[in-house]
Length: 582
DNA sequence: GCCGTTTTCGGCCCGACTGTTTTCAGTCG
Image 1 (cartoon, rainbow, N blue to C red):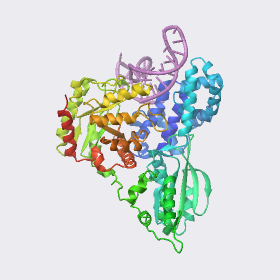
Image 2: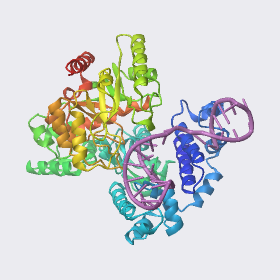
Image 3: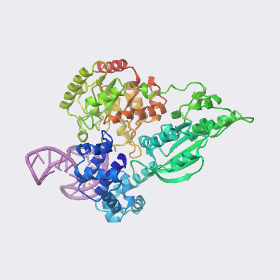
Image 4: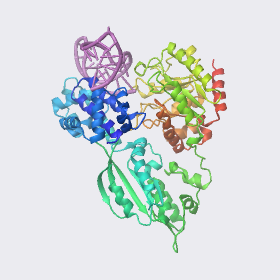
């Protein structure tokens, strides 16, 4: 059994034990072991073979035995027994915001609630408010939480979609009969969340490729299987109760550009394209651009756009949100690419809640070809995340100075902080401490429930503070799991423009905050954008790619992004900001 | 269940916030 699946299984065991009221530390041991498996330095089977798995922190004797058993036999009786001990619908209840293991246990014990449907019925009947420890407010929150789940239901995040589709895509692309292949759909457009997975390929005879596809081990269910298309369900990698649809379509190679465009979408963009073709006496479908007499030949998508009088429209812009007018006038932006980034900011280390050392983070950034890295561990109020005291901040500065000395002139580590924005909009460090940083990310981590007016005033006060370089994850949302806090983001953007404070695109695939639409607005308002990974490990730096996706969907070119400027320009700008402080 | 050792037990990240209570449990990060 593959490592990620073992990790998921152990995690699930921990969760079930929580619901059963087990010793919380025993539950955590399962979650920790799952986490440890997700961050193994080497291949699991190798680590089992050479005994190094037993040395991994968080994996003791018992976990080691369970992991080995799962890895070698694919089964674990203890898991099967646990799984049988709770109704299958009960794990889904954990996704309701505000419901944890204890409340779920109480609901199960007193009302026999073991599914979302039961929960809703009980809440609507007013039964929940009568349980000891619950009340009217909790009942209302549960109903609200369920409706949020339904909005976000069935979709998955980009990184998970990629993890699911990539191995399948590689198999298809490298298949000897396949000529061209591409991932299509919302993933190609780099949408925030992904509904299903689409792979397109061309071949003289698609049937054998489709046959192999439906026989893949990760396929849980075959929905349909014909000669040009097959649909299957795959297990989500993170939610055992969720299935993800994956479609594979095969066309003849001459049809490929049309099919590629068609299956990439969006729907609104496709409708506009077809209208455009009709206006030119042509007709467009997924197989061809046809005239009355004959088809218009196209080798690539570029040809297709050209045939309709358009510059090539990158997939990220295909939303029928102004891209046609711009493509017609040759006014499409030269979109930023990952390679344009010269460095990045807002990265955590093991000084607060990150996993890697300062040096490991710097080394990882350097090996990605970046020229600088901004450290930003948490500030003192965020004790739960290991927020740094003033004393530790000064210690870290000394370590960063020494590290810069060691790394030499070609790479620079910036001293920064992810400084909490306190409830009144003031910052979590006094000015004399803030003055010692090269830059300051200001973020909200508390009092999410504030009324919109207060929250907006709070954040505006922070972005208007001359010591704040950039605003971190401006809305606090977690995709598919937590809504943004109530805030007037346009007012914040206006205030940031006024103060010359930058706004971050938080590239963590759970956040993507700010979103593409506000990116466009921020750019229009003249606000500098900075793409930050909010990395808590060296691997987290790779999330920058998702941030670039947001920037591209937000019509940004390299010129609009602070950390796509030359390293010397970045240093100069940070110096200028510090020297102009009152 | 893990881990370190004051070496086979006893602590395990921990404080703010919310909604429920009337002093605190549960959730979140």
